[in-house]
Length: 118
Image (cartoon, rainbow, N blue to C red; front, side):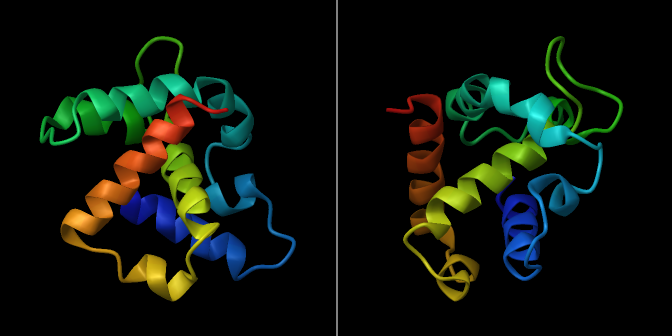
């Protein structure tokens, strides 16, 4: 989720005037379709932060498999939102250098914030 979200975030930052959906590429209107589900999406990852189960990945990133009620590829939108949140206080270079425990901690904090917006 982080790699794809960061790539989308960087793409948008480097392309002035680019919309979220243009950066996400497919499906069209993904941001509109996924936005109402951000809390649920964040909770799914917070419930299993260390999961290596392929179903977790497929549920969020597959073109043709998504849990009922969620748009396909919604994990890309969630990853973008995480990177966007973290980009509010970090440069693109700082984001690109996040690794290991620091990356995990900051991503989990961002997911918690997305799950419980003020």
